[in-house]
Length: 467
Ligand code: GLU
Image (cartoon, rainbow, N blue to C red; front, top):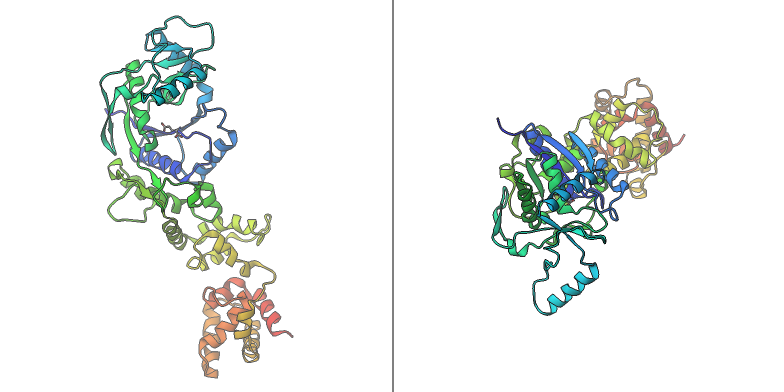
């Protein structure tokens, strides 16, 4: 029987969930779902000065929005200090870790001295032979082997060899009693039975240190897969300088979560040259073998393109749900409005090919919903001439006589009217569009009339025609 796959996403809550973190979460989630495994969310908040509850909430919010559901957790490392303490004590008892009383000032002074003498700046092992627990507060250091090599067999990067001589006796518990990242991450990964550590390659250099801790405990080392970096267009590491990087910022800009997921998966992973994947397809196709070893570049235009595709391919019902918060936020719709979701779906769906984001969609929807609209002065001048207003008056009379203003009914009637007058359809349709929507670009005018309904259409026409 093979061991069941167990993976984790282990963010430090020192910021919002950003593009890079979300991609790491997604790859772990996909790996778990692909292999019928377990996906764990673990909050690495041992750095108490920089971690906040607000960021934990933001991370949970970002993952929930992306629909990356976890099977266990969120665990918090600050709830587990007793566990770490017990494991640290075990290493001390076995002579694999030792107390260190060197003060930060002393360490800094030695570091400076080593630097100016061109010597290695690693901890010099001064407290290595100490056995007794000192009376004063002391850190705990891990006794690293000084000879030999450590090989990280990375599933993405292949084998990476580290000389043990460059790994210093790192602190695993600070003198204030708080454990450090490289220690707790190993204890947790073992305690939580993690089989595959999938994380950003900014942790590659930590991996040999962590392997030594596994070995000191006699634990089996999990598989490691370090994901290549995400860069900005200028090839430097992706940061705020390159624009929005937090996941919730994309939500607020009107991106669909599935579009962002689809975008994120292609940052480093490929399956032939397919670009658009449903979640089910991703779960079926995802593999770590498909992850490339080179860095990928974050391309906001491509993300926008994908979003456009996802909007075009959404159902009316999904669009209604998705656009509703944007309508409320922009004040186009009251929060307690009892608008019919069916109708809203129809209205949103009519704009699916003209909206790159839900914000753009909501903005255009104002002409379906607002009591009154402003008419673009240029459009008015060009299309609302005395002659065309005369035509609109005839359309108004025609519509007033109808009970059903659906496109199927109105379209042939307006066509007939144009033919009878020897006019092109546009000569009637364009003034109508300006009168009804305030501008010259909108979905098909008969669709617009159907969605607006007779009452609103007549009201808008009355405003333009007067009388
Ligand atoms: N907490 C670490 C981070 O946010 C991740 C550690 C890990 O995945 O091993 O970078």
